[in-house]
Image 1 (tube, rainbow, N blue to C red):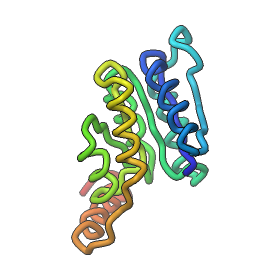
Image 2 (tube, rainbow, N blue to C red):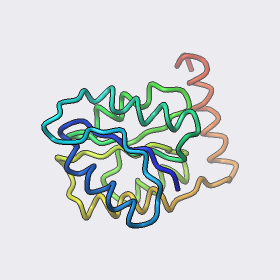
Image 3 (cartoon, rainbow, N blue to C red):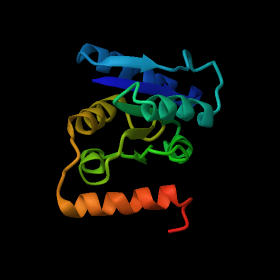
Image 4 (tube, helix red, strand yellow):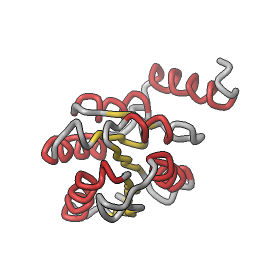
Length: 152
């Protein structure tokens, strides 16, 4: 699978680990930086790089990392067609894809460690959206909010 990933400086150590982990598992990784914990970066910029790449279809899914996961989550969700969520447990990482068509996983590097990140990434990438009517109906409502400028 082709995966876009980025982090700010606070998320760099976890991002570096996740990039290596994904490549070891055979995934194609588009790494949008940062390249060191010393290179300060604003989380909206790093989240935007992932969101735009997924939005254009240049990656199937994305992973955005900052200190808490909250900032990159908020920023990524401002892009049409991006359904980003923080997941710090495997149930949410998988169900977010299955029920809600989450396409960007947001992680908090100051919240979780590398082994938890690996299990979350596996759950996120291993999940597929369910095609049951109830999930599609709900997802279409979300898309309606998006297309209506949130006036739903």
